[in-house]
Image: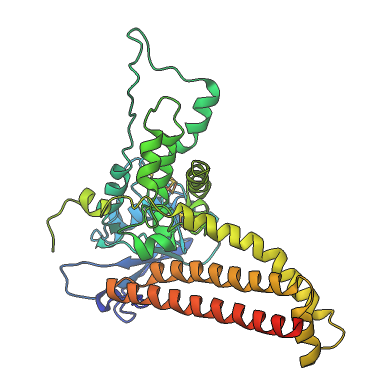
Amino acid sequence: MAEFKLPPNSRIDTRAGKTHRASAGAKSVRTFKIYRFDPHAQQRPRVDSYEVDMAGCGPMVLDALLKIKNEIDPTLSLRRSCREGICGSCAMNINGLNTLACTKACDELGRGDINIFPLPHMPVVKDLVTDLTDFYAQYAAVKPWLQTRTPAAPDRERLQSKDDQQRIDRPSACILCACCSTACPSYWWNSERYLGPAALLAAYRWIVDSRDDATGERLDALEDPFRLYRCHTIMNCTEACPKDLNPAKAIGAIKQMLAERQH
Amino acid sequence: MSLRSPLARVSYHGAARDGVGHWWAQRVTASALAPLSAWLLVALLTLPASDYTAVTAWIGAGWNPVLLALTVLLACWHSWLGVQVIIEDYVHSPGRKIAGLLLSMGAHALLAASGIYAVLRIALRSAA
Ligand code: SF4
Ligand code: SF4
Ligand code: FES
């Protein structure tokens, strides 16, 4: 049947959380409540509280996380690389919304505590680090590369008109952070068979690419009750995307193309 | 545990090359049901009397039985498609999923057939 409850080892042990107090001289203290899980510890996940002196901390949530890791608790695990919203590694659930820790300012999050959890409904490797193996495999499954049969002119690139470029301009800006897919209830329930908004946006990006010759085959590969039609236009994906992309609209456009070729 | 590659795993059994018909039917039945249910609601609310004789007479009058039978058919069809989506979303064990889908199909077919039969029976009796 449908699973309405988390498995026991995924349920948070509300009594196990530790509190790391700020030092006495701290000026503006803000509390970060962070999900902690270590698969080797044979313990249920817990939520630790860290009091951070924001006076000595950068503005972004990632700055606070790195301060915690460097100065308070080195056992905290998280992923980050570019720290400027372009690598997609620091995606996590901050105050209930999936977003990038490096581009989310603490000030944007009101005055209260800041709750930080890993991306929802993904296997947790440790703390805020989730296993994205299947997410990347789904991206690979839509063949995100140019497929052509038309030979390129020997002396130049494959040309594109300005209008043609416009169609792929925004979708190409996806950084594969997984904020959208892991915010999608349909993806939660059927992530083994539903490709999810990120992979479908990537599929769309190649379907509408004027230089690509495999449009039909790409649509064929998506025509499936689970791969594509699990999307019920809930729009969480578009709401979550930290790059302001619109996977829901792209999915709608794919469905429309599939309907058009029927008649 | 399986050592199948992630790509093979997420590719499952390939694309079923299906789903567009379901998607289209869901939308077409919904757009047809919108005016039909409005008509039904308005007609029932503006009936001068709502006793047994008045309602059965209304069911048999003019185009009413045709539109009513159509409403029953489309409502059952639309609901069947919707329930199928819910089952596929939430029920993951293959046996229960197939059982649920068949059960829903049977229940909706039964509902549609009995609804249409009831309309016809009333309509033909008042016509006779
Ligand atoms: S619009 Fe589709 S892909 Fe986006 S969150 Fe909703 S169901 Fe998921
Ligand atoms: S569409 Fe947006 S949220 Fe989804 S993976 Fe790409 S950048 Fe991230
Ligand atoms: S660290 Fe690269 S996107 Fe946040």
